[in-house]
Structures are given as C-alpha cells and as structure tokens.
Amino acid sequence: MVERKENTADIVVNVGSEEVTVANMTYTKDIDVSAIYGSGQTIPNGYTIGHISYEGEIECEGNKHDINGHFFDGNGVPQVLDSITVTHLDGSETAFYEVLCTSEGYEVSDGDTTTTTYEYIAMRKGSAGSVDTNPL
Image (cartoon, rainbow, N blue to C red; front, side, top):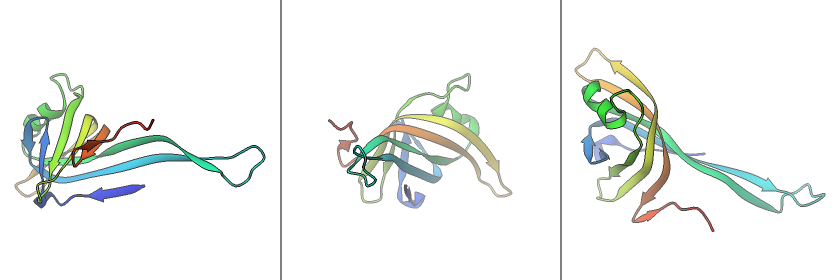
C-alpha cells in the first residue's frame, strides 16, 4: 500500500468550484494484485490487477454547516462531487474525480479552530494532464 500526506500550508483545495480551508488531507491508493499460477505450478507465472481504489480523509476548518453543503445534500445524503483538486505550491495539480464522502466527524477544541473530518472515496486520480484509465 502506498500512502502519501500533503503539507496543507503548501496547497489549495477546491471541492467542486469552491475553495475550502484544509487542516489535513490524506489519500491512499490501494492496488489489489493477485498471482496467476499455471496448472500444477507452485511459483506464479504472472500477476493480475483486481482493482485500484483511492480513499482518504479531508479535515476542513470552519463552520460545519457551511462545509457540509459542499459534501452532502439537504437531507444529509452524500453528493457525488465532480472533483477535489489540490493545487500545490509549485502550481501543479492533483485531482480526484467522482468523489463521494463515506463518513463525517466533528471536533471542537479549546482553541479558536473547529474542524470537520470527512472520509472519501474517489473513482479516479489525475495529475499533469493525465487521468487514470482502465487498461486495455
């Protein structure tokens, strides 16, 4: 499993067309790989990719009710977001497409900051002008 964390001081995150203030954002790319064995073989002679998935957490700062409108409809049902786009300090972008929140959490601390954490899954990831596709 490959896991990567972004430094939120260096990025701008857009949920759809709206910029959100992010305290923390993570994602994991999970690749399901299985060995292929020939008849009577104990050593694999190939591999197959079962699926690739993207999931992570995004912790947003600000008023929970304002932020929830980016991720959920008026009934609390998750909206499928076109994308979550991360613009890095160097100007490059990483985007997650067809994003759906799978849970939400709320935290109030003794400081001035209130954060809301959302777990999400994404269908595809893109960067540098290319987007993941199914192999032929």
